Length: 103
Image: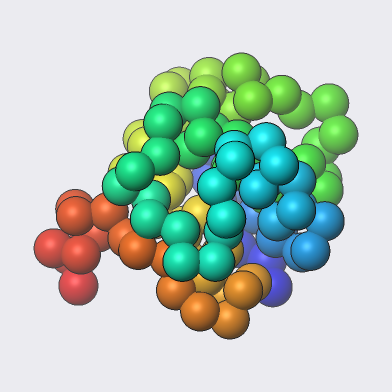
């Protein structure tokens, strides 16, 4: 499943097995049951990057940080990333406290 996200333009997060494997290797965190509250800024950007590389192979983690800073905010991006990863693994990731308060 793909999740739209607006940064510098409309982009699509997609977390297939390859992207999830890459996310685990790059962050050192298992995606199943992941707690988004315990991630570093680099890990959050890396998760986002892993979901975007399917459509932009030249994107870097640093580019993703800049896109979030310039066009969105971390809370909104991580909400979509969390939903996309949860859907991909057929379970749930623990949402941030701010996200929980909205629901």
